[in-house]
Image 1 (spheres, rainbow, N blue to C red):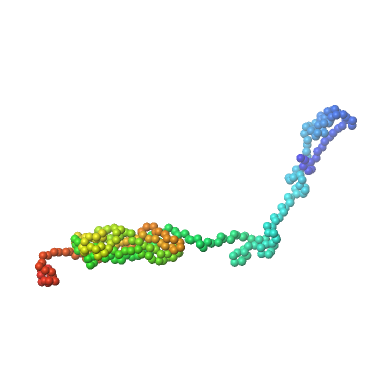
Image 2 (cartoon, one colour):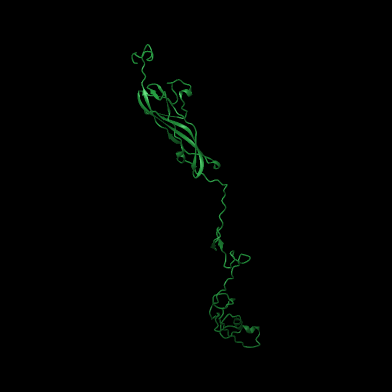
Length: 284
């Protein structure tokens, strides 16, 4: 394609106005025959080259603006609104309002999805530490017989324990936590401890005579003093009402008040009556 400003110089010399077709093969000036010249295959010097002089301008040959003309501006985008007006009644483009009707400019954001009030909140995993402050304090154990012990004879330790429910708030929700006794740990104060999951009733509740062994009784070897303590390990569940009931991981251990026990020594004598019957008898 020839660019604008190009100049082509062709020199054709005809030998006769009435030349026949064969005359086209006659050499002309420059060593070319007339057919090569007419076909544009050589220049006037006999070279098989065409010299094209001029300047080349970027852009299509059909550019209506001519050489070096700038590209036309693209047409403006069509307004997506049918009426071509902005929401606030002006012709200055889109304008958005916040939830209170304040103008916030053209940067609109989607409305947040509505909250589902019926969807319950997630309750995290509950540890024993979360409910330890609600745990009950066990009552002091009952020591039989009559709060004392007799050396080399069974002393019974009775423990009153039952499921216990207390209300409160956990994780921002009202709840009720229920503690159920699972394990009893008794320290008899002489280096002996006992763990049992069995209830610890009194002799009367068991239907037994005094100074008879039970699951929680203990025998001291000698007279003196001992301190008896009881710890109760509770399992727990938390009731959040409509949110459901959740178990508590681990056990909550609660200690009761210690009880001091005097250990007496029993001695037997052969007498002819009791001290009540004969107060002046030996040993009375």
